[in-house]
Length: 419
Image (tube, rainbow, N blue to C red; front, side):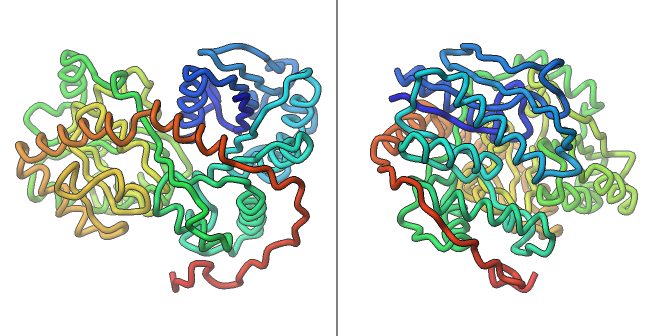
């Protein structure tokens, strides 16, 4: 099939897990014989002079990476304006640079590409397949009090309801999307994220070097990695450190990543008097990350909201012992007592208990880590995921342009929760 993938993230422009997902899916589809074009963007804050539009073949995929237009719009300060401008640039590039090439299906990833993806699918009269990777309401525990949140929610609603086939990355997300956007959950396909585990197996010497570099000889070493955002729960892990250190004196925490919650995490460490045993590493290069994960006595993923949790797959591929909350898709990736140890999201005492359980029983931790690694080849193999996605492409039927009214957005909690 000829597949047009539309995404606001694609290497080297990667913000989070979405970019890695789209890259792996696109290259695997191409390896399976499909003709794949990725329509994406150049780095935010650049322009056509510093970062002109490129049209290149990378790993069997044609990548049309579109330059930002001249208007001064800022991703951080004016997200909706910037997103609309990006969508316009993507649409114009597709119409002017693809020549006579036409896809059999358009696959859109998240709300930021709703406008160009819907316009292209409508104009070409081809099926629109949509993967929802996360929701605005989910990030804010059901509250859409900010004007921007309501705008984002309405774009998500439009894209999900326009889709000819809708995909979520976990069963938890399927229920969330169905509830939020008024859809039948049986009409939503669940296709997990995947991983190529071989690239995550570090050299033993690199693992030993990582432990030595972080002064972890003889003391427990905990690692958190990922975006530093409130919903990722890093503040809960830091709050649990005093309890963990009482059971295992000297335990240290390494925090890898960047994000808006970095000041909150530092303040939490000072509040709980553990700042001296928390190292904020910033972004760890991809080449060094597997050794860091393998060096840990436990990789802790304390998310309060997590549509899937690709970081859990990466940690498992590195052979790390996993401690994870049961938020969203994490509960489907980390099976308590089998492939890791789990705890309720936001429950700081339970988080501390879970980490102590792993540190108290290194043999059990190694057994669960080995089980998690074996499961990757069964449930999270990219070739199987790409084949399943291609089947959804083939089954999708174009419903054509559809005019819809604006969705009604509740004034209270959209999940009917009190907080």
